[in-house]
Image (cartoon, rainbow, N blue to C red):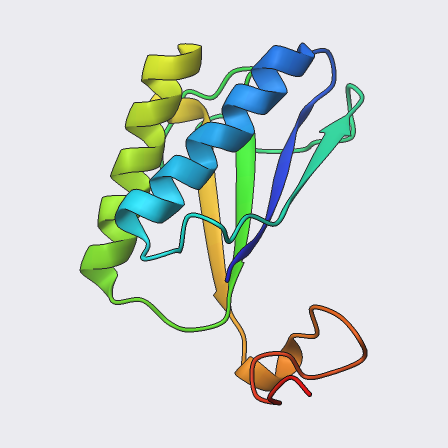
Length: 130
């Protein structure tokens, strides 16, 4: 049940954004143990000067095509699962969008189950539907 935010510079086509979204979801399903119907994403696009990042910190060099993925997950995954996910996401983006792996950054945060309400004012992950 992850919720994903994708941050990148403005100017990409609707097809590019759809492929970016689909590639992320495919990597989540294949390598992060996410059900195929569990897709919740937001794409944030920034004007020049609004997406600030070091071009060389722990990787790089990063270009103007840099994309930051924030993944908020409701349960922890082990390190090997995260590594598989990082690798699969970078491979899919390189294959589908020719996005360089150096331009892909991922941050995963884990929350408690009672910190999610999908609808109807309920703690959806712990309260049964009535």
